[in-house]
Length: 283
Image (cartoon, rainbow, N blue to C red; front, side, top):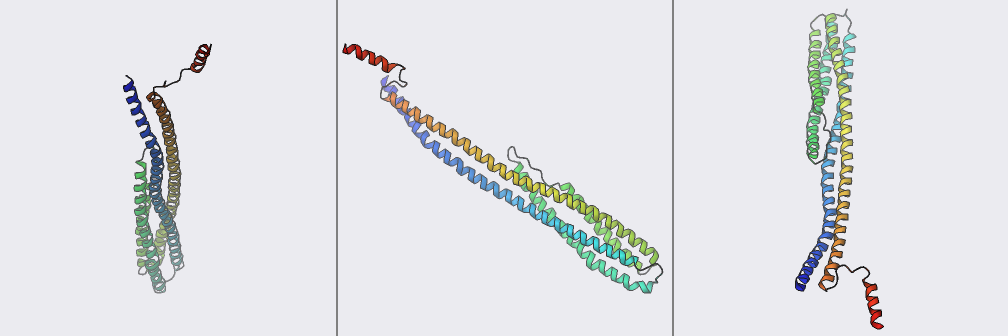
């Protein structure tokens, strides 16, 4: 019986010693893992933020380009209205030709530029949404992606703008060989439609820019939240493993007492009883 107790005590002390080794290693590992996870998450979020910032910059460029398009359309409209209804075709031929060239060179190039910017925005937004959707796959994480429907509407508006600009150019070309009075009215109508479309597009660009701002804010808050979660997780694991290490020390002490044949838990009042017995023996 005594041998079994000693063997059991040795086993307990060995297990306690192993736990004393594992606990500090676990504490160190929890902080190492925290640092690695935080670094990886920061890289992912930074990549998404960088792309979102690119989208914001391209939206600003698109807005500026649309303003330039509006200025060109207004200039063409003023030029056509300045021809007058009483001027003959010969007098209007040169101004109309200049307006046609301006539509081809200035307005056409601006709309092509807007189309290129729009293509880059679509590509970048797709990349941002893919990253955010990957982040949302994590437990208890939900972040809004950039609304693709709003971007599709903006793309449709741009396609419509290109068609209206082509109609405007055709109207100016026809005005060189037709009665100016009727041509002026047609050009003004086309220019007015383009102006209305540009106002709608600028409003959509402004609204989508605000949505991208909210997306960037959400990514920033997510990064701060992940840092907080990982830190608290590492702190909690450190506390648990520290308590486990201390408990193993106490358990090892008790096992050592059992190995020596002493009472595992000293009896309360045992010292006073021994003292009384000693006194009686002296008497």
